[in-house]
View 1 (cartoon, helix red, strand yellow):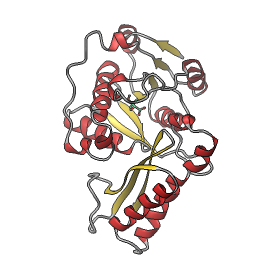
View 2 (spheres, protein in one colour):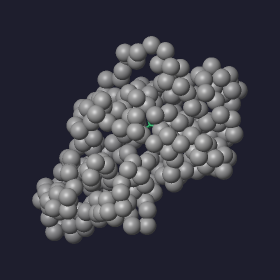
View 3 (tube, helix red, strand yellow):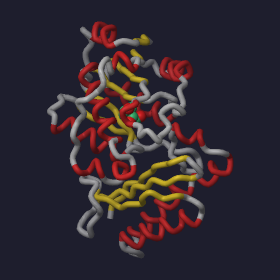
View 4 (cartoon, protein in one colour):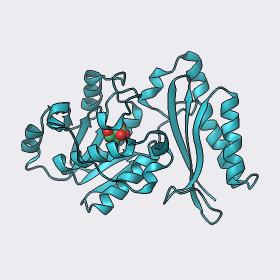
Length: 276
Ligand code: PAF
């Protein structure tokens, strides 16, 4: 496995390489990331994983400095999976000048996560666009855990005519249902025990809706109340159309319920897809 730190070295290494899958990450890898890598390995001849904590996608109040960095352990995991190349660029190589050109995104980027993290998707889309230009992969792999991110990347690739296939992977969960995330390590013992209630409440919504017990709005409201009573700070619990991420309507069949909430100081997101 090659570890490459500069854009110049990366471009020369990839010059004659065909059928590349790209897996963008911010490091601190867990089984969720490894699922992305496995999907990439299955579908391509050469797998590039980037590890870069992207400053463009953090608000000044967020955890950019605190975000866990574990390059050595990450490289070991990737070597075990037989990854071909790890790209760990430095900030000054990716941003030799201030990144003034940023992608303008559609309205869906201002809903859900975008409403609570203004500029987040613009930062994500811009860095992914830069990586796609630098690496020029045939495909790129994203997880469904970041459901809205996956949606926006698909729109970007489609609307900017990138000749790249976007592959997705299912959410990987701990035994108690908590979706794996690098931010789970911020949780203390009690918070970690409580954290699985986010997934539980999403499943409750799915059964309420699929059984016809409650309408969308009541079910969302009950979920917010349930979490709030347990001490969570809820940003949103929203039932949406899978294809558009717009609020679900009664004609829709393929739905997803997305949620973001804080337990202690840690903000978690999760989602479940379902059909009615
Ligand atoms: O999902 C992530 O870890 C990040 O948003 C990504 C896609 C690596 C861009 O920095």
